[in-house]
Amino acid sequence: ESGAEITLPGIGKLKVAERPARTGRNPSTGAAIEIAAKKAIKFVPAKVLNDSINKGL
Image 1 (tube, one colour):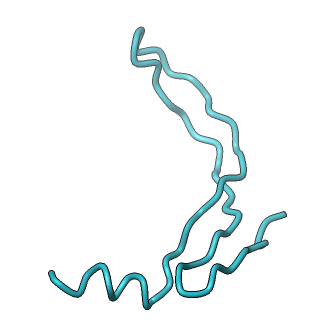
Image 2 (cartoon, one colour):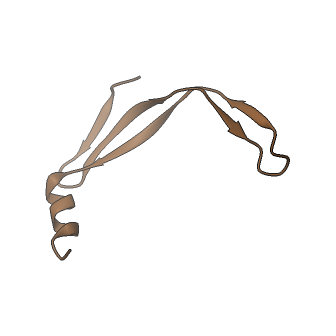
């Protein structure tokens, strides 16, 4: 379901994201192909995790 999410405290959130249909390209032939719309998982890191990773930068 779009908008559904799972929260992992201190780590982040997993959300359902809608990917729109788009035109892609076959790398072997170069022919244009239609890629269908689909749902995918999106990870959003928690502020604590993001800050700890970027602390030394």
